[in-house]
Length: 91
Image 1 (tube, one colour):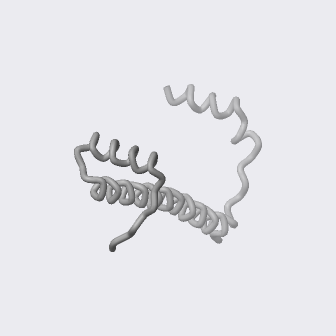
Image 2 (cartoon, helix red, strand yellow):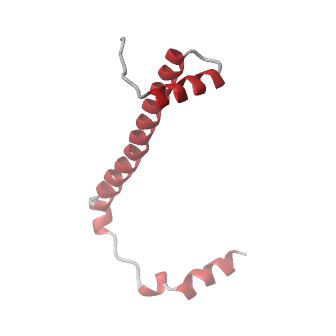
Image 3 (tube, helix red, strand yellow):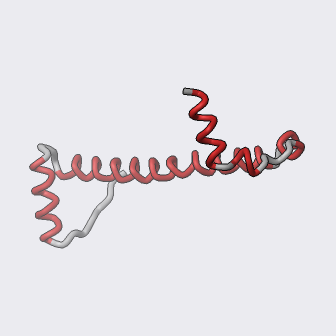
């Protein structure tokens, strides 16, 4: 694909400077900028997808019939003293 950009002279000068610093032509440098930008955007989208999958899995787990039949934990089972007593007994 060929794209024509109208850049301000100062932006063009910066672009030429950055491309030269990387040892690339302006065209190659712009192509790499676009590819990197797209990769970051896709990574950002991919980063949210696992969280959505995790939320869906947790929702399904919460609605599981076997979990609905399980008795709730007692206050004693969740107390700080009970947790630390069990840890001490394991040592």
